[in-house]
Length: 123
Image 1: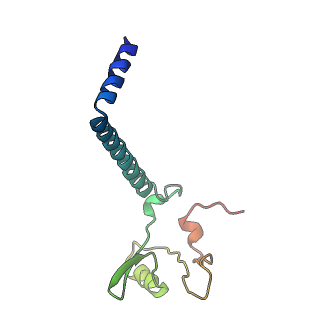
Image 2: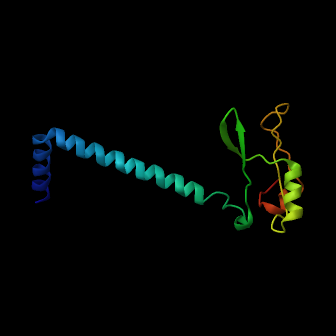
Image 3: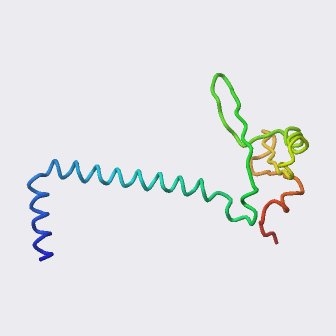
């Protein structure tokens, strides 16, 4: 019985080649878009969930305009971080990355509180 159903399906696919191609192509494109959107949402929701206190971690982003173009970067000046910590009680600890052009991108500088905010295991 199942073999009969596959035979009829194959006959209909070969009989209506163009509409079958359009339907199969549309289905595959739609499914791949759904998978990509699902992976993006999963990545955004699961960010930094490997830390013990992940619900208290946040990243401050800065909008900068150069030549009419706006770019958003995870760069905040150190005095701004100190001002946020003194003005708002919710900002208790901070870590930061140094993005000077003189230093390579691999150099990361952070405050001593990085060990309190994250749960990285160091040797």
